[in-house]
Image (cartoon, rainbow, N blue to C red; front, side, top):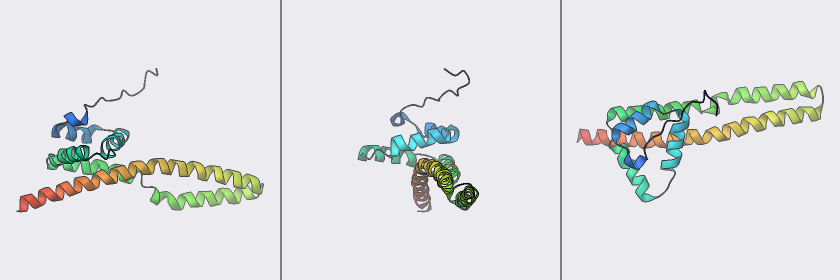
Length: 152
């Protein structure tokens, strides 16, 4: 085993979490742990599981909601590849032009390879972004619900 590998934090089962555990998770979890949390808990489409997790989010105080929304926003913006799209297209065009002078087959091969690698990376990271957007929308709805209750 590699001696410098970061030790994975062990979290309790979500069914046993309190609102303090949830707040702590939103503060300390890495993006990978955050994505695994959303995938393993919110992608299970059983009614009981979703109701439990929604009630867990409803039990958070304002600080916990803010931490969760901030973490989801961070993950969402980190994996938003639309801002890099113009640069990616320019790099592909430049590599195609440079390699066209050498050989058309070499140009097609290199450009296809670069495009394939980039698309694979984008597809893998898009799942993380979608998961973060989903949780962020749930947290914002819970926050709006609490504000309406406070106002009435």
